[in-house]
Every structure is written in structure tokens, then in C-alpha cells.
Image 1 (cartoon, one colour):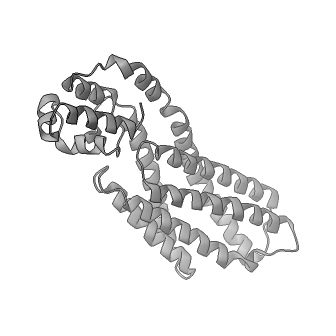
Image 2 (cartoon, rainbow, N blue to C red; image 1 turned 90 degrees about the horizontal axis):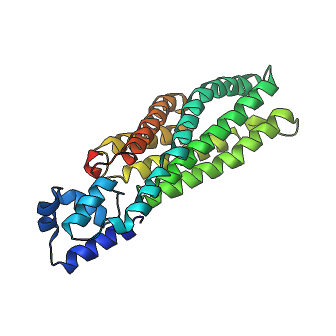
Image 3 (tube, rainbow, N blue to C red; image 1 turned 45 degrees about the horizontal axis):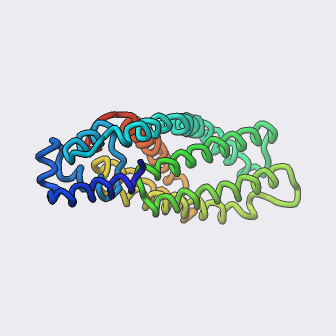
Length: 261
């Protein structure tokens, strides 16, 4: 059983028994905030928490236990792959930025084939990383962030082929579109940062810090003037995203209360 159906089921069972959230808390040793999050569908609780709630509500846990356990087993696979892709992207991006700076300054690259492979690797790993975050939206709903992730993915799909075309073609120069490209990516980072700011009930204040870094980096990159200064908050933003992803994955795999977040 997935969210938000699970939260609705627990809410219906609680109301059918005439219990308030505070009274249910006393029966299963959780806290009110946890109950509120689960019933609102904001978090997917672990099997231990669901079992405690259903037992407190005199509901047969065995009726959904198998399906719930199977669902948990499917969680880590792609997300760990997405995290690994994110780490690889983080390091590849340094090579890409260095070569791209050379390309802009000199108008060409000494080894365009190698640069093209770096471009392809950066593109594929970043797409996989963004895909991992989109997958996490099933467990930590955030419509605004989900839209921002899709927007950023779309920008990558547009600009990376343009870069490759310009790299091997005499008909297009990077100087012709570079500022537009920078502005669009700056907008995308700012949008993603604003999305992380939307997490006000999860992971303490960590998403807000990461979101603020994303917004600052996005604004600096969008302006074009502060691109170099924007690399500092952008790097911290990327590291923060990686940390937040592995934190989320680890918590998804635990059999504890969502309060562990």
C-alpha cells in the first residue's frame, strides 16, 4: 500500500474508532507530528511504524504486510545507482567546466573528441541523478521540486546536443548562444533551489540550506556577471543534493519512525 492511500487508511481507521491523533499517539508510542505526516501522505513510514499503528487500531497487519514488504525491497536499487551517477557527474563536471572555459577563451579545444566524451558522460550521469530525485518524489512528495527537476532535465536535453553540434561544426559558435545557455541553467538551478525550500517538515533545516544555496547560485549564474562567484554556492548545492539523496535513501531503508529524518 502506497502513500497517500496508506495515510487515508490509517486516518479512516482512527476516526472509525473515535480516536483523536493524540489518543492514537498514546497507544502506539509515536508522536503527534509523525501521525500528522503519515495521515497527510507527506512521508512513507517504515514497516515497524505501520505495524505499530495498525496494532493500535486493532487492524490485521498481516493483510497488507506482504505487499508493503515487497514495496520496500524495490526502493534502494535505482536510487543507489542514481547517487553513484551523481558522484561521477560531480567530478566530471570539473573537467567539463575547465575545457569549456578553454573553448570560450580560445574558440576551440585541443582535443574535441575527448571533450565530447566528457560532455556525453556529464550529460548521462546528471540525467540519471535527476531521475533519482524524481523517483524520490514518490516517497517525499514535492510537486514544485518535481517540476523544477523536469525543467532542468529538459534544459540538459536541449543544450548538450547544441554544444556537441557547435564543437564539431563551423556553422555554430559557442559564443553565439553561451549567455542564453548560462541564463537558462541559472534559472533551472534557482528553480530547483526554490523546490528544496518547499520542504518545511522534513530533515530539519537541511533542505532549506541546500535550497538557499541553489537559489543564490542560480541567480549568480543567470546574471552572467557573477558566474565565477556562482561556482562556489553551486558546488555546495551539488554536494548538498548528494548528501540529501543518500540520507533519504538510508532512511527509506530503515524500519523506524519517519521522525528519524
